[in-house]
Amino acid sequence: MGTSSSSRGPGSNSPLVPPWADSEPNAPQLQPEGQRFREFRTQLGQFVSGGGSDGAKLRSALGSYARKATGGGTIGSRRFGAMASAGGALFDAMAALRDGQDPNLPNVDLDTLNGRPTQVAIGMLVKALVPVNGDAERIRVALNDALSEALVGQEEFDFNRITDDIIAETMIAYLTECIFEQVILDSRDAFAKARNAGQADRAEKAMRVLVRAATDKHMAKLLTGNVRMLNGRMVRDVQLHAIKDIWAEWEAYEK
Image 1: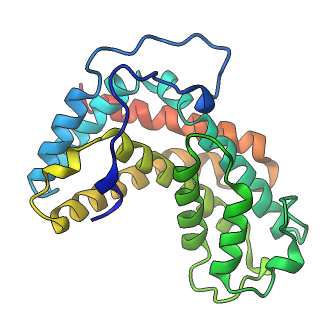
Image 2: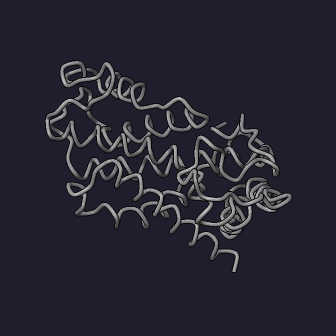
């Protein structure tokens, strides 16, 4: 089974935005709605138990997730502050490598990366980029998957092959995985409703496709043609803006 098998997830009384994750730590917090995950988890469980083929049920589950479980786009996007900051650091590192410069990361420079097996180089970058906080494991997975997808087919790491398009693709893949992993975590035991591992995997794949489509739709337009005008701090804000737009799209599923 995929990433969902060990998910326990937060309870309804958990804060909408954990302190380490808050993109606006000085903004007031809302009180979480009672049983805020119930509808989302019930609908997602029905989607999974139905074989992962009912797209309307999945959209309804994500609509409830955006509006009720996470408190709407403004609050929901704040939950991704730590992940977005790590994404900004990833952008800065990739942009430096594209320009033939050291990525300004501990124990990582051009000499240690270039010519290494690509997966080894990715491992070094991920290790240097993962922060110490409650989202570390999801950030680790997202960084590894995004870099592996962007650099697929490269047996040896070569910074000369990093382009603006590769950087944009990396950032879209990274945010996709961050959102997907967070939804999986918050789903708690919804994927346990699957009758077998294959059914759960099909449901996960369907949800990842939907998350990727939404992320590509709302983030690509903020990156295309702009990569060289951005820096990590700005890309952090780009990710949070894209999440608000994704949440707004998902909330519309409930109407």
